[in-house]
Length: 431
Image (tube, rainbow, N blue to C red; front, side, top):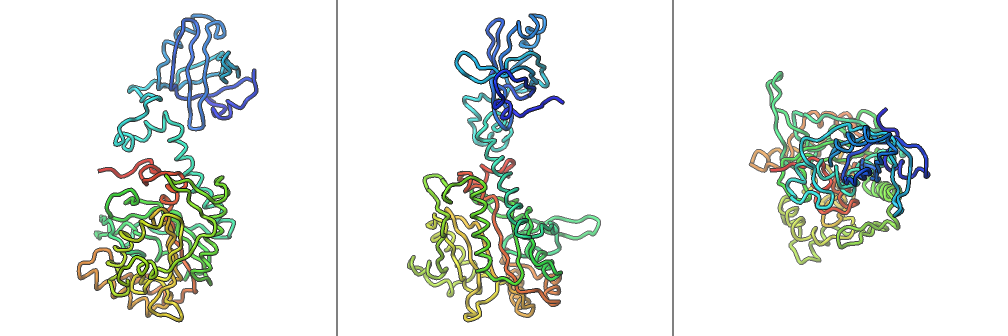
């Protein structure tokens, strides 16, 4: 075994204890018969001291320190030791260079100065910058915690197709690919919604999927063409039941991630996730002195909301009860057929979560999707396709249910105190 302890574990060992570890050299200086370097892994950094007499003499010491360069990976064995300045270090007895880079890595002092290089070659940044690496460790922890919370609530994790004959479940422009063996065009999924609802028909009452979706959209700081989404569905529940569950989910997530008092620092803002208020969608238009969204097309109302209203909603807020013509897959309110049972969580001007009571009436759903298909035939590329397989499944009977979708990377971006999804994506799409 090359490495017995991470550098974080190594730094916590008591003085004079034997250690064996490895890492990348990020600094190096030699002073005759003594040399110092810092080695780093994804968990931490520690100083290493090479002394000729502790390593068995010049025949061992000199060839080793001559081989070490910044960026190489080394294995060291020795004892925990504090320097005269009090810096916790490893006093080396044995060492071996494991790998020498062909290209020089960036300086730990200056980092990767060019933003485009930093995004295209993220490995250069995280190889030397522990804070940058910590973002991706946080990302991993958030994803694993999401699964823990839902598993504890007895949800079943499932997976559904990423290739489909219809792009359904959301209003978005899809990516198109071609299946050679079948000689037919297929679509990368824009959402897993219809397949998950088909599983509800199949008797799975509490399910979730954490996976990739793809939308052929523009590039900006809040959009990725390939993104990670979480969708969950719960039978015999409506959108208010799902809001209650989501509040529990969010509270638990923040506590387990170590956020105190449900407060999150994001840029210049202290975002308060305790007791999130609710406002009505139409009321936001009225307060802004805008025309009622009922008099606009769905795309017009959505565009105005995105450009003029949503950017003003920095603190977390639930926006609920949307005009019915804006959500063809959401259930109408029992006392108001012009309104759907839907809410969105807006944070920092971004849509983070969308939830609604699902429309399970197969007749009405067919009518609404046929209207969507007609609009698509008329040139609207972001309307939904007619998915006959989904409609047939509904005819066998879907239980009353509520579904919820989360843009996981947007949530990660908020919790990591970053302003762009590219900052929390190791391999962002670049032009």
